Length: 234
Image (cartoon, rainbow, N blue to C red; front, side, top):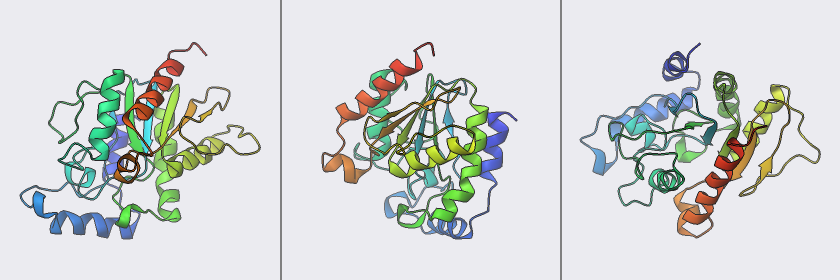
């Protein structure tokens, strides 16, 4: 299956009733500043270079960001401080993105050697998917990782994404070290064999960026680390 067909399958998913109800309700009620927008209101497909050596894995679409625009990490703020633009500035600085903003699906954003997805493809209430919803959606992550033939490094944005990736790789046959790797910013996990290296990063949420837990330099450093590792001849 091609990544294009895979994403079409994702878009048609209705397996989680709570998420279906929420994403569709939000697309009708909307946010005041986006009242004139037509919301996407469906599972959000992945985005980027299908031949990428580096993949970014987030948590889930934002209700008025990706759930509105239909593209991962896109349009979740107009002040430049939303997680989408915070992330894009870092990717642009390192050379993965052709521009430092991600506002709407026709803004011309392109990735080089980078691909972006999430462990849950629908916007969850309060940005908190249940463990069962994560488990259901993990089948898509499992399949997508197999379709990405050139992957060398995966950057997990946040602990939930980091832990889910460990579970997914373990299900695919990777030997997870004991004690089990713990999430942290810049943590580097080598899984052996043909598995990509897993890097941890704090999520570029407003809670993290506005409190100083995650700075632009810290995020840039993680993607510099990813670029160095993806270029290494393993």
